[in-house]
Length: 87
Image 1 (cartoon, one colour):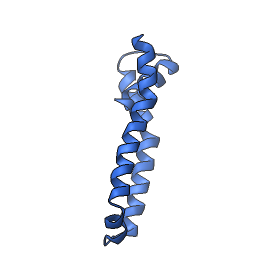
Image 2 (cartoon, rainbow, N blue to C red):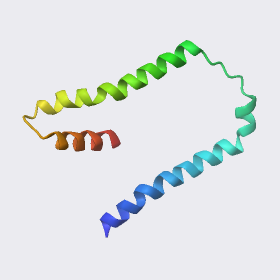
Image 3 (tube, rainbow, N blue to C red):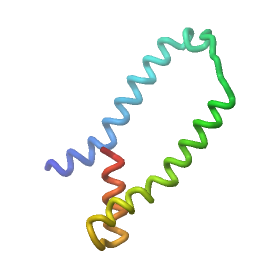
């Protein structure tokens, strides 16, 4: 029963979060639209590059950490890294 509830909650909770965040944005849309946005292309590009690097090199970091536990299968490492990134 708990396993089924967790499977349902995995889909329902994000929908609830999206609903409430969307509602706040919709209610304050006029403020968002009229805000004085200061977009700096250099910082935006740097943020994009660093974010991409984080997602590319994070599995290598997990590989180094899990190598400290001894020899493990690749599937186990991927499973562990996936679970850790969700926490």
